[in-house]
Amino acid sequence: MSVVVTGIGCQTALGDLDETWRRLLLGQSGIKNHQPFPSFPFSPLAMMAREPRALSDLVIPLVQAACIDAQLTLPLRDCVVIVGSSRGNQARLEQVLSKSMEINWLDLLPNYAAIAAAQYIGTTGEVHSPMAACSTGLMAINQGFQLLQANLCDRVIVGAIDTPITPLTLAGFERMGALAKTGCYPFDRRREGFVLGEGGAVLVLERSLQAQARGAKIYGKILGASATADAFHLSAPEPTGNMASIAIQRCLVQSQRKASDVDYVHAHGTATQLNDAREAQLIQKFFPTAAVSSSKGAIGHTLGASGAIGVALCLKAFRTQTLPPSVGLRQPDYPQIDWVRSARYQKSETALCLSFGFGGQNAAIALGRV
Image 1 (cartoon, rainbow, N blue to C red):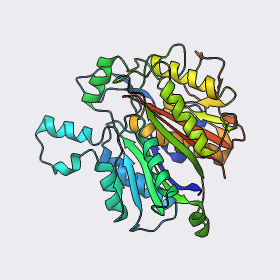
Image 2 (image 1 turned 90 degrees about the vertical axis):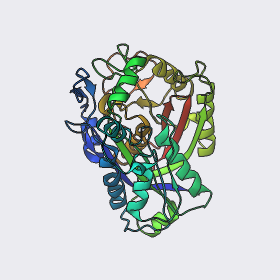
Image 3 (image 1 turned 45 degrees about the horizontal axis):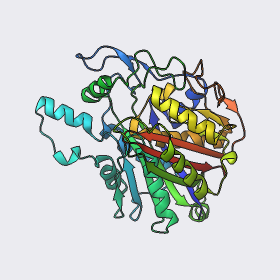
């Protein structure tokens, strides 16, 4: 049973989906030096505005944009909602705790994004709120894909949203030594860590026959997906990449594709030493001839939302037959890989999106052009 994407709502530091795509192809970056909190120094961040955004600022606009793009009329009574976030409404919670503000505490629960999305579309169907660190977005899409494949629903709204620029998040990652000092340079010899970014992507998934029957625009197909866990370390990836390899292999098997069929890989590419090294090894092992790029040098690391945004960008690549560049990559640390350094017109039939998260989360989704 074929599962397709009929609507996308996306927002990053570069703008909405079309503006993000346009500026990404030009090699522009939304990363700038900001000082959102007086107690922290200026540092590179991928922010949407001069002040940090809250999760509640993005949920409804993204769901609305996806529904409008898919030409759906609300309410969607039987639609399943699977919208995750790695940080939830943490920004709002920190404000409440620091200023002793009065608030409805239900709005601060980790499932806020999913509940708000479900209320907005008026669904009485299932509501899920996955949280799998930086693999959250791909996990949400995977869950929706599996439900449709099992014929358990007719339509799913999936995605992930994160607004991680908060004092606690900055302090935590700074103590870990994970944050960059000057910018984000995925897979580059001078990489120094990731840059936090705000953003999210929400997708409408449907069965292909249903989408075709109503004349919906189709971005592409979800061919297969898989996820594993390393069970190795709280934050560091398992050195051999064994479980990550299994996730990729299972994804390819489910997709009925060979590794050589993959034309383009949207890499996780956090610009940290350990993640980039392990991911580059995986790419060289499975996809030595595929074109590869990471979008984090342009939009920062949106944590749990990064995989969902990556899928949205892969689907734009299908529609435009153009591959987006890996902004910030000047001196590749792994020159054997076919890095996309500038926008490249290239026919692509199959793409793979990768995500890796703290706790050893490994996720892969294969996408096909229609």
